[in-house]
Structure formats: C-alpha cells, structure tokens
Amino acid sequence: MVLGHLLYISDACHAMSRAELEEIRSVSVRHNARLGITGVLFYSAGHFVQLLEGDMEQIHTLFEKIADDARHENVKLLTLRPSDRRVFAQWEMGLLDLDEQSKVYQRDLVELVRLAESADDSTFGTPVEMEILSKFCMLLPAA
Image (cartoon, rainbow, N blue to C red; front, top):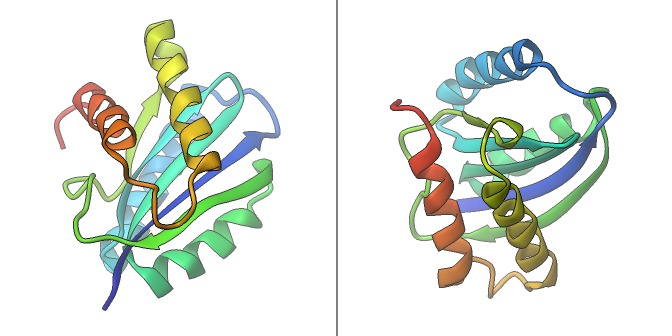
C-alpha cells in the first residue's frame, strides 16, 4: 500500500443545510472506515474542499465516485500524491462547516485552495499548507 493524499474542490449545486452536511459525513464515516480512508470535508459559501488520505488507488477510486455525485459540480482535483503520514488519522471523515466559524477560517480555506492550485505534486504539503490544515484540525470536535 502506498499512502497518499488527495485534495479537491467543488461547488455545491445548492446551499447545503447542516443536516445535509451531516448526512454526507455519516455515510462517509461508514464507507471510509471499511476502506481505511481518513480525511476531512470543509464547506463554506457553497463550496467544498475535501482532503482524503489512504491507499493511493483507493482514494483515487473514491474520488471518481465523488466526482459523479449530483450534489456538486465543477469538481477539480488539486493534488494526488504520496505521503509519509496522515494529517487526519483520527477521522474517517471530519466535517467543518466554515460558515459557522469566523471569517478568518474562511480566508484560510481560500488560501489553502490557492496554495494547492499553484503547487505541483512535489510541493503540496509545505509548512504553510500543513499549518492551515492543522488549524482546521483544532476546530474539529473530538473524534
């Protein structure tokens, strides 16, 4: 098994309610636990950012299914690369609705996307990106 990270962004087809986000998380937790996949889903202002961690082949296959989900569009793969460690090891799928957080975190999410879009496969995972992801980790409720 080759451990990897996959990061993508997409646009929600409609404003997502907390109940809809929780349903996505609930299904993801059950499915990801079976596959050994961990990660987190961020939502803000009609946009999703999701980081998946696990076996490279499995996370790529999962991404292909996610990309076909009718709840979002304009799905863009930002990075798929090997990694030596998990960032969200305790989360089959953490959920962070940044609309419920301060504007600072929404700006951090935009910065993370900007960094990921400009990075090549070898540079994603820089200290700045990991710092932003770590900041988001602290906002998640205990697993």
